[in-house]
Image (cartoon, rainbow, N blue to C red; front, side, top):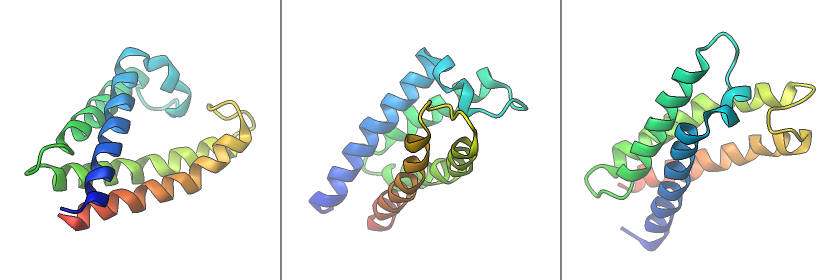
Amino acid sequence: MDNYTFILRVFFSILFCFAGIMHLIKPKIFNNFIPNFLPKTAVNYVFGTLEFVFGVALLISNLYKNASLGILILLVIFLPIHIWDATKIRPAIRKKWIANIRIPIQFLLIYLVYNIYISS
């Protein structure tokens, strides 16, 4: 494995472990991102747990391919939510320009996680 892939794995591990923990200890932060027709508490805990587990698994040699695929799927699932949030008059992130910039960042994250996946 090259240094680039290792750095990406560590970066995404930290990012997703942190996000997963935040989903679990401060779920109200994420409530405005979750559409009203979904059970907010359950969605927070399920996705928080998945994010944390995938983040840890990125650091385990024989699991990181599956973990990167899981993160890739999560990022694709979250993309429409970010687009939906950016179209709201008052986005959940509070600032319209931040909501708009998150969309291209999401595509960048998808690309970087895909690089982890194909490197295995």
